[in-house]
Image (cartoon, rainbow, N blue to C red):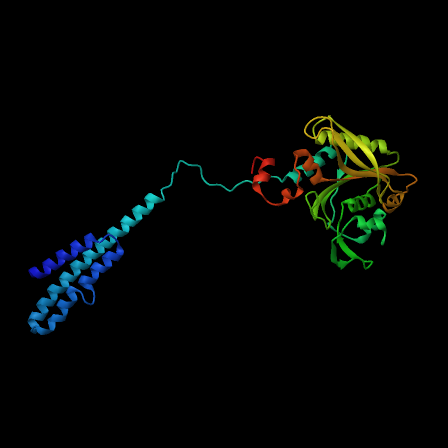
Length: 342
C-alpha cells in the first residue's frame, strides 16, 4: 500500500480517536468516507488510469477503506460503551436500601367511628341492620308519620331520583336511616333491638353539614321499654364512646314526627377543653304509636324508643374537629392524624 494511503489511514485513526461524541465522529467520517471524502476522491481518479493500474490501485484503496471503516466501528463502540458506563454511574442502585412497596391505606376517621359504634351496641345486645340508600316515599316518609304534604317534610331537603315507586311517587336518596328501622321491624318479631348505621343524603353543605353524611339510628321495641331505658342506654354509650365518665347528659323537649314525646340529647363534659359547654349530640324519643302500627305491631302492647346520631358529629367531638368538610377533602395530612398506617 502506498505511503499516501498509510498516512490517510493514520490521519483517520487520529481524528476518530479525538472525536468526543457521536456527532464529532460522524463529521470525521465524512472527511474520509463521505461523498466528498478523501477516499471517494481517490476512487474518482481511477478513471484516468490504465486497466492494469486501475485494478492494482483500486485494490489498495478498498483495503484502506476497510481499515478506516474498522477504525470507525471501533471508535463508535468505544463511545457507546462510554455513554453506557456514564449512565450506569448516574443511575447506580443501592441494593442495601429497602425496596419500594405499595403504600398501605388506613381506615377513614368516620368509618372508625362507625366501627366503634357497632362494637359498643353489639356488646349490649343490639343487632346491626343495613338497607337500601335509594328508598321509596313510603319507607322514608309515610311509614315514619310523614304523610304527603305533612309540614314535617320541610325539615329535610331531599334528593329525588328520576324513578317512581309502585304508587307513582318519586324514589329518594334516604334522608335518614330510619327507613331501615321500619324494614327490620316488619321482618322480625319483638323484642327488637337494632341499630342502622349508614350513608344518608340531604341538600345541605356548610362547616357542620354535608350533602352526604353518615347516621346511626337505634330502635328498641318490646312490651315494657320506657324513656328510662333510653336514658340508660344512650348515657352508657356516650361514656364508652368518649372513654370518660366525666360527662353529663340531658334530654331537652323537642319535636320529631316519628316519636312522641321527643327529645334532643345534649351532653356536657365536666373536664377537658369542652368543659362546661352543652353540645347537641342526638335526636330521640318514644316511638309514635302510628309508627309502631306501620311496624306491623300493636301500639297498645308494644312500646319502645328510637334515637338518631350523626357519625360525623360524634367524630368531630371525639377528635376536636371544627369543620366537617375536612373529612371529605382528601387531604392526607389531615387523615394521617387518625391512622398511623397511612
